[in-house]
Length: 203
Image 1 (cartoon, rainbow, N blue to C red):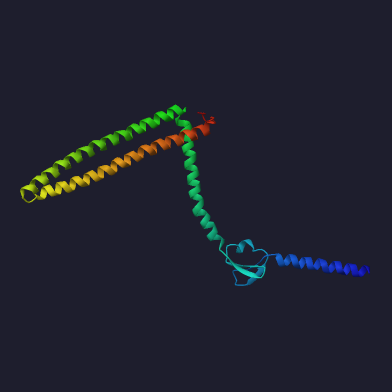
Image 2 (image 1 turned 30 degrees about the horizontal axis):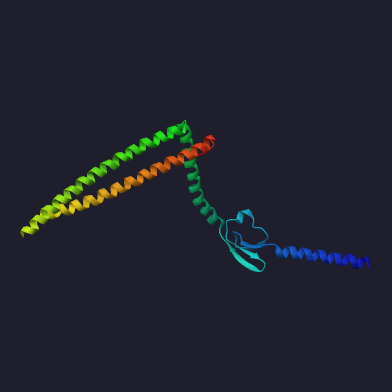
């Protein structure tokens, strides 16, 4: 009876071992001499070579680890560059400004420059529009008289319309720049408070 119990225990132990081995992953690889090997792990010297993985009866081709490393190398530098730029920006904030009021002053100076460009574009646009009105009036007068329009007048009218369109684009761009400046400095103020550990002001 005792021998039978030991025998049953031995059989159970062997079954457990086989069950564990069945769950283990098996790799197949070829060495430099062309000899095929099988094992649960791939030796380090063959880690970068193409291999086949057998998992629960299925075979799966293992990608070259160098491809994975190359992919990470392409991604990591971008994240690293962004991190470095963020650190530089944070350093510039705390080293350039001693208070939120100074950030407001810097914002106002930049807005003055944008506003100056906006005023310039507005003046130029108004002048171009007035000039085009005069050209159109001259065109109407000549047309009413039955005379042919001079080539120079036709060209001036076309150039005037093109100039007005360009100035309008410049004016719109300047208006958007105003919004960008305000948003950028507002974000800087929020980050400045975080870096300095200030508590946001309550309304």
